Amino acid sequence: GGYVTYDPGFMNTANVQSAVTYIDGEAGILRYRGYPIEDLAKKASFVEVAYLLIYGELPTQQQLDDFDHMIRTHTMVHEDLKIFFSGFPRTAHPMPVLASAVSALSTFYSDSLDPHDEHEVEVSTIRLLSKVPTLAAYAFKKSKGEPMLYPQNDLNYAENFLRLCFGVPAEDYEVDPEIAEALNLLLILHADHEQNCSTSTVRLVGSSDANMFASVSAGINALYGPKHGGANEAVLNMLRSIQSEGISPEDFMEKVKNKEEGVRLMGFGHRVYKNYDPRARIVKATADKILRKMGGDDELLDIAMRLEDKALADDYFVERKLYPNVDFYTGLIYKAMGFPEQMFTVLFAIGRLPGWIAQWREMMLDPSTKIGRPRQVYTGETERRYPGVE
Ligand code: CMC
Image (cartoon, rainbow, N blue to C red; front, side, top):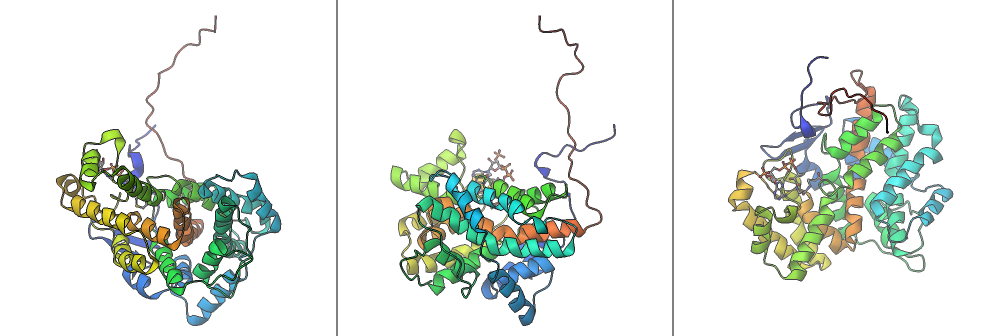
């Protein structure tokens, strides 16, 4: 017996104490380990931010070099793991393919599964950071029917991934440094976001002492949903259909406000931000520049900006404090980089990986961690007598 709190969606229930990421949703503030996202986005590399999130402090140059070297030298995956991709249909969405491949890491790297062995945790951390981009690129290659490349480890994190995605064996592939830089920025913006749906999933699965690969693969599946990471793909689909059906942004907004067929303005709203998402602000500031340089679709950007202008001036959105979130403009940039919509959430997963790892490790070291086991408010029948089928 005893007292339980009914709190659907954990609107008011903190399940963890965490020192990784701070969000002030009213003020639109986001900090990783105390550092404002704006500063990190301007100056840091994604690998440096991963180090910060996971170990709690910025690395010295030597620590960064060592960490970066470890990641670069573990980017290959076992040859047998590549065969795994052949079993999926060619049309398979790369998100569940990636989740499956990450889940399979538990079977290939069974020497780093103990969540309470410091060395094994360190090994699986490096394995995930280095191999997830490779697996993500293979999921992409699979969908294109192109051969998978081996990583080229003199390239940095973003460059290596871009080459694995867009390179073909018969030709030299020159990574455009500006595209790599833009990808580096977007990965940093996604690197952690405290107890969001996928991170909470990683923690909940890990709370049973499931290994890091299993926990992260569960997180990837949680991220797949259109209300979470899948929103970036949904935004582009929305903009495309507005464009192709020739509906005006104004008419589309009417549909949203009337809640017709459950239509939402994708890329808007957030559980925590009741103000402009600081990540969206950074993405928007760079979107224009990047799209011009990469020859992105100006018409879609135009539709997006008109939708935003409309929304920010509309009572429906003002009353509900709905602002653009990180996903509103990212899809347009990914598209200009050459990624198809199905890859957008995969890119989000690569970005969120350091956050999942940092939070999983924090949980494992926290003596107050208990297995996640919510209670319920039972609404079913009281006791009934079984009459027998006759
Ligand atoms: N368009 C239209 N109305 C909306 C939207 C939207 N995008 N988001 C929320 N609302 C309305 C909702 O209908 C409700 O209205 P009412 O009070 O009249 O019923 C009110 O605003 C509160 O919404 P809620 O669904 O109770 O809020 P929540 O905190 O449970 O949901 C959310 C947050 C992000 C799931 C939601 O805003 C949403 O579905 N947004 C669109 C999907 C999206 O962009 N997701 C990405 C989130 S950020 C990155 C990430 O996590 O991946």
